[in-house]
Image (cartoon, rainbow, N blue to C red):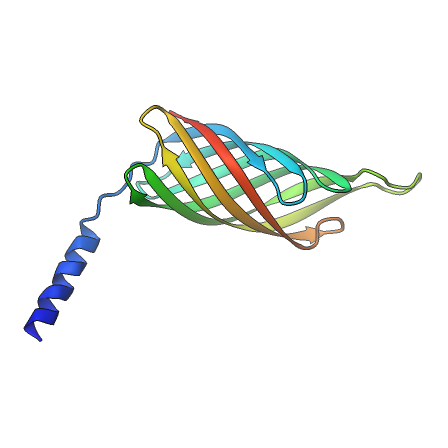
Length: 161
């Protein structure tokens, strides 16, 4: 019983003394990818604390039969993995303005929608002010054109300052 208590105390001690990874105050760059076409967004990250940040994205998406202009905001929790590697998870939402590519003449070919999003990814923080990430962002849309679940996978490159 005494050994179990000491082992538990030691494990808790290691858990609470783990080093936190520094998050830069600001990072700006590009996030490239999508699930059913190609998309690019300008991405800005604002560090809130040693383990939390906000991410904002403004971008364009090209799907199978539509194009869209989108704005997304996410709250993220960042946790260190090993060395300069971090993993992060987050939640957020946004809105989009869609335009159909092959709409019939006289048919309204535009729509807007709201979306909720989750986010999980891994990033590498170089010793220079460069951050590279690969993330997965499931999004649930609420609108005429985008009213389903979309699985967005993207590569991000950001300059930290």
